[in-house]
Length: 302
Ligand code: GDP
Image (cartoon, rainbow, N blue to C red; front, side, top):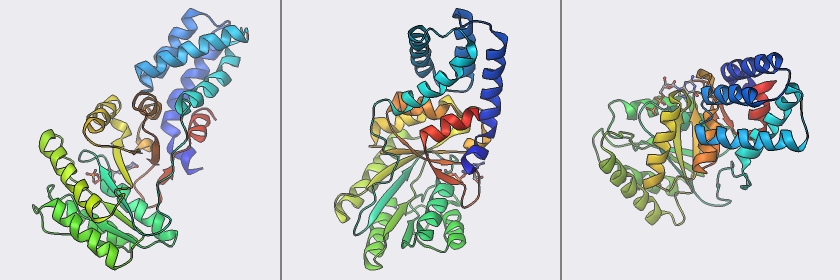
């Protein structure tokens, strides 16, 4: 239900247009597909993905000899799910260690919702009975440490921090030691997100990762790239940049509730081959959901 609610804007935008299209056409022809193409691109599904989808749809329409535009609607849902899954194993779950510490690193540019996502996940894992610790690795942005502490207080988990401007790798070192000695189950690590200085940012991320790797064999177990759905195609560009320099294992797409262009989920998966693991559907503690492609696609129509 939360999921559906969060998709209201996208659904209204998308299904209204598709319904209107379907009711205006008597038969499925080139013009029909062209209009559908525009609707999909308008929903930020992404050019490549739209082309692939239209191609698949045309084939299916021919194969099943579909004449009635209304029947195409079901095929659209089916194909959207298929394109999302794209023959890849569904891997939206977090690589949680059965024993010992799981370390999750969060990367992404400022303002996308990194801190909020860490707070929400801390809440989720705490509710599951796990011992959670946060690492204030964004020592660059003014206020970032305090903001993480606000979430820590709200959720009731501790934050390991140094002062603003200090070395993030040193923060990570301390955080990992604290997590080990307190026998924490999960360490959620914030990082700085200034993309203006790409080279430095990437160097910093690498250094942070090296410290974690050295202190906890096999860690970080996940590197989650946080992207803001309302930035549309720009989110895709950010994802490409991060993918080039860091081993991103999954995506958290925030603010899906704030956009009518939720099609970006499909573009990210189809063009980057990185699974979307969580979606943010609001600003509150429990406004984070595991991503389920079927629920998502069917949520766009119903
Ligand atoms: P950071 O700079 O990446 O750490 O971003 P923040 O966590 O500070 O988030 C930036 C703003 O986005 C804040 O006002 C958050 O409340 C808001 N925000 C984060 N996630 C979501 C979401 O899923 N939905 C909505 N509507 N707002 C969000």
